[in-house]
Length: 157
Image (cartoon, rainbow, N blue to C red):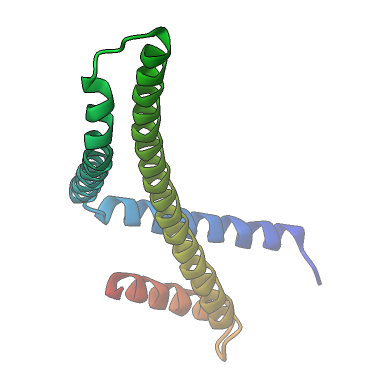
């Protein structure tokens, strides 16, 4: 016999259990360390981008300095010098934007991987709970054992 009330109770129990696991996970996470690690990685990536931009500028600097060192004698020479400067600034800007985009992409990918791992763990726990409820003892005793087993596994992980 199908009972909406029983189904609703089971859904509510699963939601409560999932919420408890998430809250516990958030509580046990050393957020200070996570933020420090993220800040260090961000600082290192920023330094790497700055070094790369310096290298790019250094490689084109000699060419540009030769052109810019000459005093312009005509309107065309002034315009050419401005184009060189504009191209140098454009290259620098592209390097900064490219590095920032790459960093954001890496952070996004890492967050997605963590969410996917948490989702898989959650599904596995739900499957274990269902199997335990359908186990040889069944009923409330089986559910209590399954819940206790899930708690043990959570603390062992």
